[in-house]
Length: 94
Image 1 (cartoon, rainbow, N blue to C red):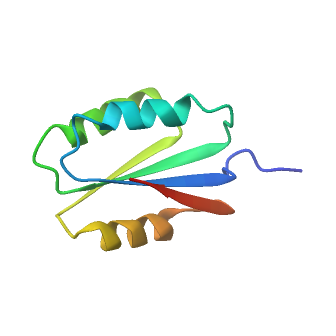
Image 2 (cartoon, one colour):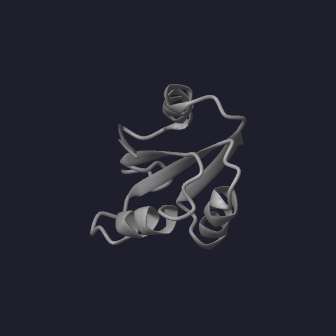
């Protein structure tokens, strides 16, 4: 029996000052037909409203997790997302 609590795919989304693009990015993920996924969004110390936008999506959708950290650059954010992922497959979206 398949455990529906563990998604098949984790999408790691590292965000740094992307308020202009983050909604379009997340909406494009939700416009896919595949639904058994989780978005792991890592806000990498954004100074714009990126974190607020991510938090808004997380409050509306149960398959988005948002984490915040000081600016540590892309590689660190990706590695943190890998550590947080629990799915069989993972991918990155930039």
